[in-house]
Image (cartoon, rainbow, N blue to C red):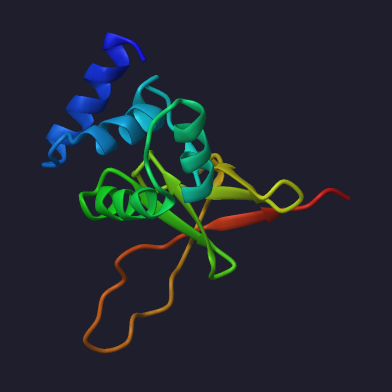
Length: 138
């Protein structure tokens, strides 16, 4: 990795209040080191770390992704109630789920119009609305 990618990863962790341990740094560099947003699964991040020569277990990857979500630097998007993707873009935005490729990508926010949501039940408020648009080849 480059000094620039290490700096991005360090700042990303420190700004979130996370201690930049060796394992967090390795995963953070893969996630944000190049300055671009990405969608990953725990398994795909684990494979990338392995290819990069980083010694992290799959359990560590899962635990670290959870810590990143709790710190607010990652957003978890669940597809089919069981498959989780992690997005470095934490702003509210819709997603395309490419069923044939099991891949998640951003959908254009400016084209999404939600005119009305149902009222929340008594005593609770709507925390967020997740929009996943499933795509399949014809």
